[in-house]
Each structure stands twice: as C-alpha cells, then as structure tokens.
Image (cartoon, rainbow, N blue to C red; front, side, top):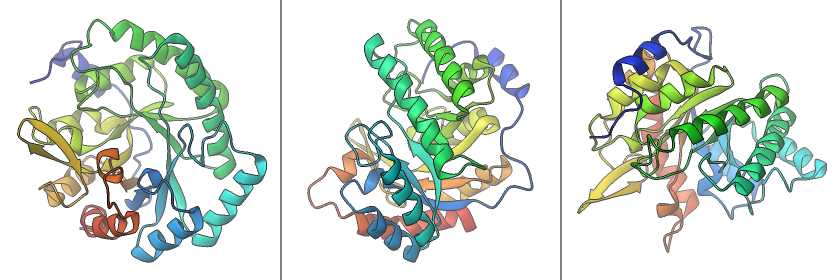
Length: 301
C-alpha cells in the first residue's frame, strides 16, 4: 500500500474541480500507436513502414539524449526529413518521449529545461496546428515523498514557465519504481501546478498487481490524462518485471471500459520497456506485431 501526499480526500477534491483536458466528445477515436523507444536502432522509414502495415496509426518519438531524435542535436534538415518520412507513411506523432525528471542535481535540471524548450519547438515543427504532447517521468525513488515534495513543486513551477513561453504541453507519468508511484499524489501535483499545459500520462503496468490498483489509479488521473502507454507487469518472486502488451494478464476489456467511461479519446501507445528491448534476441518488428492485437482490443474492442 502506497502512502498519499497530501490526504486522499483533499487530493480528490482538488481533482474534481479540475477541468478535463482534451477529452471532448468531438475528439477522434482512440488511436493505436507504438513508441519508437522500442525501435532504437531501426531506421525511421523502415520502422514507420512496418508499423503502418501492422495497423498502427501513430508513433511516439523517442527524443532522448544520444538518440537519433535528440531535440538538442537535430538540425533543420533532419527535422524536415522527419516530416517527410511521417507524411510518406501516413503516420502521425502521438507524443514525444523525454527523459526530463524533476528530481535531479541542479545542473542536470537546467539541461532538462533546455531540452524541454527544444522539444516544444520540435513539437510545433511537426504539427504547428496541434503539437504533440511531450511525455516524461519525474524521477526519485519510492518513499522519497513527502520529503522531496517541495522540490518537485518548485521544479515543476520552473517547467511551467518554459511550457508557457514555448507553447508546449507536458504529460507526467507515474512510475512504480520512482517517487510518484501513487496516482493521487501525482494528480495533486498536477492540480497544484495550475496550468493546463501540465497533464498526465497513464500506464496501467505501474499499478498492476498493486493496491490501489489500475481502476483506482485511472479514476485519479483520468481528468487530466492526455496520453496512454500500454505495457504489462508480471511478478517474478517479489520483483516486478515489465513485458509486452498481452503477456502479463492485463484485462484488456476492462482497460477499454475504463478509458471509454473516463472519456478518453487519444493515443493508446505500446511502450516496450528497456527490460525487454535491451534483452538479447529482442526483435523490434516482432514486438510491434505481437503487441498489436492487444492494443486493438483496447482501441477498438
């Protein structure tokens, strides 16, 4: 059982007063997507071609330090080529994955703010009319709260300044192995930011085999969720291990009901964990193909 900061009653009251973001009835249906975090060494055109033929309609770009699409290293020419490749494939960008945690040394945090600004610019280059959401975890370790809560609030205020200046939207994702391993605590942090540019990303794997579970976590974060990752968790002994969608016993019909009942109409994106893609023998094309039926059950029933 995780601890909640502040109290659950106060956090839920704050969430009830928070307007839903981007969840109008007129929004498009849920879109099956695949995160290129699981295709690190695959040339983009080849990845897009396979994903489009499999049935995916969008991708999450992995814009991480040292990766091909690191926003701080991309040139105008490489951004132009990215747009051409996306257009040729018919695929859209569901989100931009960043690794920009709040709980880091100050020098690293300053670099993360510069990364965030570059990513906002990239998002606008990709789709000026509707820039894709940026997505990141928050860092820290389970049990760090409440001692680190003031730091997270202070750092998030600085992030909001960048988002307001650059016109970006950042989705924060809870993580079972980090400080914000509880959905209510994260919902309270987002509410306290008082900015529609700070929203939530949801991933059921971080609440699978836990109490509170997936349904409770979703109810806490649904009002501000703009992006959904799907992977699953199995328990080996006492250790949690991430696996592909469809491999961990996640009730896919339940997951669809939760999203539909919560009014979610956005990307539902496969995230292949580093635990999976770094393993010997990993095949990114096979992973994408194998994951699609599970994602389709969520997006289309």
